[in-house]
Length: 246
Ligand SMILES: C[S@@+](CC[C@H](N)C(=O)[O-])C[C@H]1O[C@@H](n2cnc3c(N)ncnc32)[C@H](O)[C@@H]1O
Image (cartoon, rainbow, N blue to C red; front, side):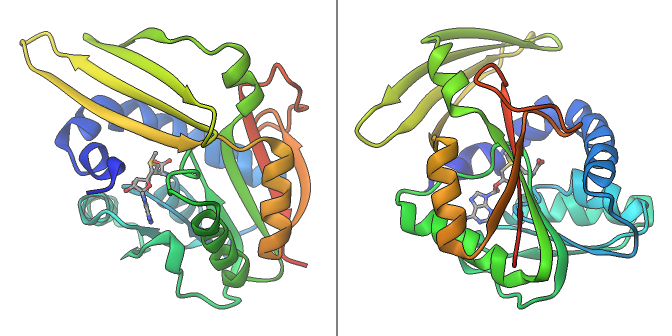
């Protein structure tokens, strides 16, 4: 089993994050549309889309949306939400390393620290390659990610987070030989339940990311510090990569 399956297939993920993250996605999509000056009915590919919080908001705004994710549980939840909202999203269970599209999309998005999960650089390259191939010439790609330099600079081995009444204790490590940040979350629920899960993400620098984009056939146009187009600096918590398929 890959590390992410425990977290993203678990009801706990939805219980902890779905409500607040869905609200946040509405603002994020508004910002992306503004930043890239997008007009419906442009065709949008959301990869990996999870339960489709961004895909559904793009669809609500009149865009033509395909959402892919490797988790059947996430895709099933997306379909359920689409049906409840009367929204149309083409949700598919697909591995991001093997995207089956060719020149079909005006925009592809990768949101919320969803890149860096795989063991090797080649697998990450395969995902970017598939994204480049899915775009029409001139189509754009936006990736929301962390700023690796910020994460390393403010690296904190022990962290405590609160999600409503739930306390999440995080234990972090940096694997310098693999360039990965690994961490365990343990959630303590007020009713006594407790669960733990592990993350392991390859943390690429901006320079490494640019090289990967170029190898995949994407031209990096800009790196922003936020979806509002804020300038990027070493102090930015997030890195927003915007690229074009030439
Ligand atoms: C942090 S979630 C983000 C989902 C969505 N972008 C969002 O912002 O809500 C990461 C997602 O990556 C999916 N995932 C992990 N490995 C994948 C793979 N090889 N191919 C496609 N999706 C994958 C997980 O199932 C999970 O839904």
